[in-house]
Image (cartoon, rainbow, N blue to C red; front, side):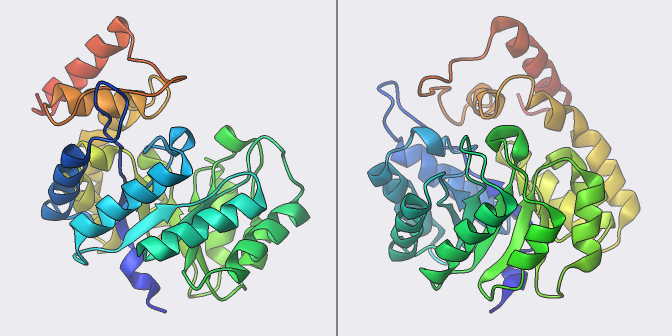
Amino acid sequence: MNISQFRGTTVAQVTPFDAAGQVEESQLRMLVDRQIEQGTDVLLACGTTGESVTLNREEKVQVAKIIIDQAAGRVPVLCGAGTNDTRDAIHLTQDAEKAGADAILSVTPYYNKPTQEGLYQHFKAIAAETHLPIILYNVPGRTGANISTETALRLAEIDNIIGVKEASGNMSQIMQILRNRPADFLVLSGDDALSLAIIAMGGDGTISVVANEVPGLFSQMVHSALDGKWDKARELHNKLLPLMEINFIETNPIPVKTALSMMGLIEDNFRLPLVKMTPKSRVQLMSVLHELNLV
């Protein structure tokens, strides 16, 4: 299994909606081309930034198929296929496999707060029902449950669990995973602002929000770091840091979709319970975009 194809920059692709709240296919295809043309290594369909929790099962397949079709084999496509019911997570995983995904991003079950053994058995059960590689997604700030270092390393022993997107913000935990992981297990940053630090400690790249807005610049930053070009990586990190931070001034993906709307790429349409950005936040976001000459 060639896990190296998932190193570098993965964009957590936004899902554009029209005014009626339906998936806007032409804009999504345009965004896919823009990402690939500017150097993004991997596309993620139906992640948190893609508003996966308000896409029904048929729409998740629709979005995955559009992205896979438009990518046309130019870059791998990762599909978010996790939920808090193991049976449903297996069904979503199998849907993505049938749609032609190259790998799965599987989020920690949310709300029901399983034990570490429950987490292990959840991901083990999913892995047993697919031939696809699986990347774990640890984001306790959203799910209420953390994949511990011990559980992550235990899951790394399963053949088709190939890595983890670490968005815990717990640098000690991330360092322990990096220190003790097998050689064929990827550690990807789930926080744009921590990408440089995690790569410096041996990480393999990032699954990114900010790459939606600045795919070329962010990919340059990630690859500069992976290539040991630290001066360039730091320069780009510092340049992009205000944008990385403003993307979370309100709940993701409200700021990033608003930014893309300000840039003239999509409309800032959301599905409830997400709503449009507040006027105060819009002013702050516009200021950062102006600084980067994006508007």
